Image 1 (cartoon, rainbow, N blue to C red):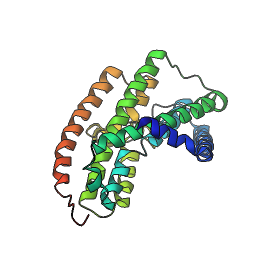
Image 2: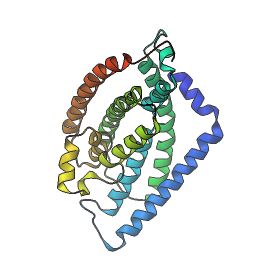
Image 3: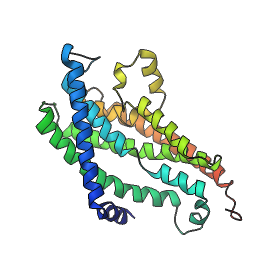
Length: 254
């Protein structure tokens, strides 16, 4: 399924390269916007200009990697009644969808890494104190965060067993993730009450924490255990919700 997914993504090359071009444009806009914001100030919160640009661009890429996945596909299958047919096939439907999504993310990571490298070297021209250890820890933390996001998306998709509308579910999902994960702005510049709230939610560990590890603001020994704890909590809750949701599947009549 991973191999099929990668081949499918590269089948429509015009679409692939147009999305690369679109990502370049987004990054140019982000760069010049924050350059203008920092014209009359040196710091916003704890961030200097080059740190903020680096954070926002990286957060935009991670958010884009987490914007598509298992949950959206699964919710549409539930709403259309296709889930009844999938459940009788000789594979676990969530495993199949996650395998296909891995192929999509492999292609997306290759594309985003190319764009990010060009933007940082040619456009931003700043020196970020990166080390191989920090890059390794960032990759590990980001991968765990992506897995956590996919599992959370499955939670959102299960709501489709109780509602006939899936569009509103994903508008809600995108809004929650954008605000509480740090995809829009670093969580550290929000008010203290908001930062406290984010500590009790899993979204902060998906985008903000991995980037903070890369920038040296957080330690992987603190971030990774929290991510793993949330993985256990989400998997446990998902197991019980999935079993309960399947009781709503009616074979006769769709």
